Structure formats: structure tokens, C-alpha cells
Image (cartoon, rainbow, N blue to C red; front, side, top):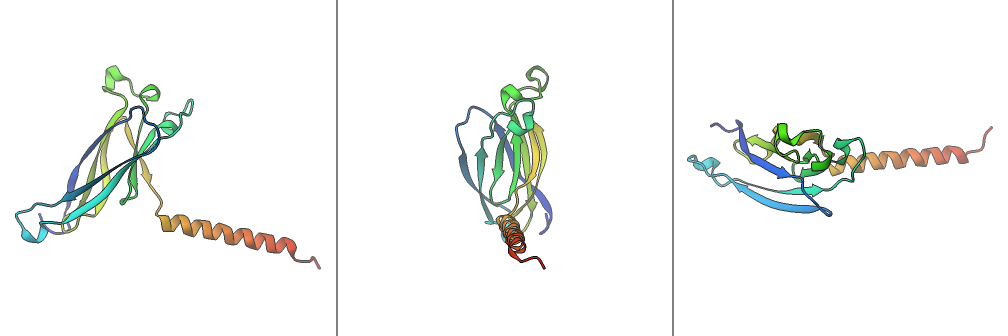
Length: 154
């Protein structure tokens, strides 16, 4: 493999069980290679579970979220009792898996692929700086609107 080539970091398998509140699972991956230049790179992240309340008639809204915190990417997994999958056809309908891919020469993940089972890719989590920028813009717009209301009409 060459530097910059995309490769599979590994596969995560998750099962949505009975959860009460958030849970974190921290992990570290280290490269082992026959090429010394590619050996010893590390990637540390946290797989965070966020539970979502049941939403009648909307299984996707009630699915629990598994987030790779440093990557800002997440996958959701249906609840067993609310899954649109059928256990006798699809196997266990509250379990899923996904692959984490990245590039050689660093251990910075680039994407989540091959989501299977009761898991589905929900999209990237916004960067904290993006959220801060959006909130600052909204606050500025609110300030301008309040100033306009206070100006005398001529």
C-alpha cells in the first residue's frame, strides 16, 4: 500500500439494547506495518451512545445514535420493538454494523461505509465551530432586529 491510499480501519458492530442515558466507549488503534514509515501511527476516538426517546410512527426518530466523536460522524440503530426490519427475515432487527475507512500515512478516518442490518447512516455531526458560528449569526440578527424596533420612525 502507498501513502494516501484508502484502507479499512475496521468494522464496528452495535446492538441497540435497553439503555438508560449516554454511554462512552473510548478506543485507540495503532498501525502495524512491514513499512517502518507507516508503523506506529495511532488514532484515538470515543464511540458515544446517545439514546433517543420513542417517537410513535417514526422508527428513525426513535433510533439510538452511535457517534464517533473525533470524526464527527454517526450511525443510528433501530430499537428492537420499533424496527421496520423483521427478525425472521433480517435476523436480529436491533443490531447493525459499519466500516470505518481512512488513508495510509495517517490514521485520520475519512468515511463510514457499508452500513448493514438495523443501522443506517444519519449524516455528519456539525463541527462545534460551525454550531458556534451559526449561533453567533443568529444572535447578531436578533440584535439588529431589536435595534430596528427601537429606532424612531420619521
